Length: 118
Image (cartoon, rainbow, N blue to C red; front, top):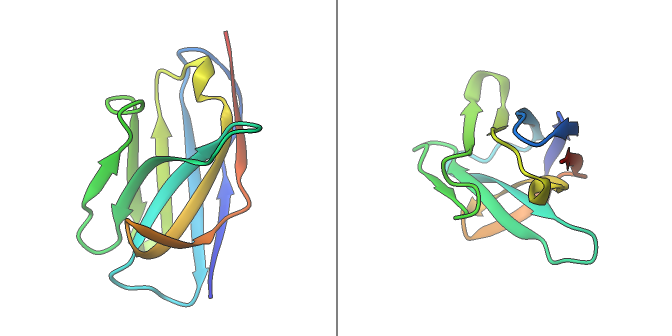
């Protein structure tokens, strides 16, 4: 129903910044939520940030508060994750997600790799 395509990952040094993008297409989902998750190899996927599409209410994991910012451009049907002051522990595959609420994500992108070297 909802198609998500992430981009913007790469290899950077600690302290650098990256901006991830997620283009949303397919069935519209007014009133739904968007989010970013990340996953280290062999680990469970963990929540990073979320935003409601219509009200712009945001939420962040404690580990990224003050460093990451989630936003969206409705005209471009795109959600962003601005990542500043990156740390090696931020290294992971980052996934874009969409769903009915910030507690129920049902659509996922394929992921984009972020690698932070020390």
